[in-house]
Image 1 (tube, rainbow, N blue to C red):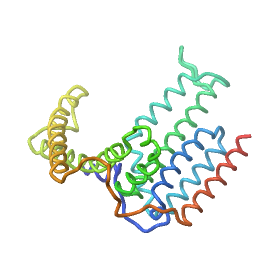
Image 2: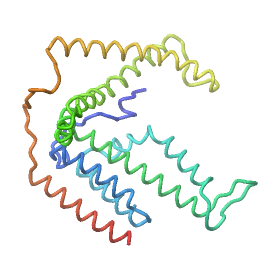
Image 3: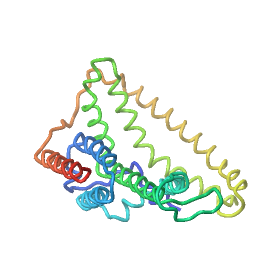
Length: 267
């Protein structure tokens, strides 16, 4: 089992594609714009346009479709649960199936499909952000976008730092989990067979060492930052200055066109 391959969350794939070269502020704003567009969509044509746009962005990132789609694995359960709840709970339209008090109706199926597609598109687009942007660039972009809030006392630098550390530690913790699972399996713990209660008890052998390792790493990081004289963002400078280029202007132009198309289709 390789959790880093199965769950490519928070991982950065180095590259020189058009998407990689975009300013991180542009990509962060693009995720927000795409989220607005997804919630604006209200019919099959709108979702088909957004799905096609997502496929084009995936193609422009030069990352294999299989690797990107693998990022949906952690949300498969959420997608399935959302689909099932809408199918069973949303009423209206033609009744497709009736079994006692349970009924499957047309409006429920429609909502289940649309909401599931909405969540899948948001998950894919968000994963593209982390796959094509290094944690440092992402933190710098977020800090620059939120900089006006620092004038009213919001700790913008600290928020960006926490984001960087969180993204950096996701692959580390997944790798640590993989090692713990292999170590416990070599000691005879079976994670594949048995009932639900037995599997839950066996998970304790993973969770406890993982928490201990996470707290140890956090303490080591805090000591390292303190030893290097870290005192927050006041007076700090940046080695790499962020600047918008023609690529970012082109990306924003495409976003405006997409907004116009979705708005026209919605009407």
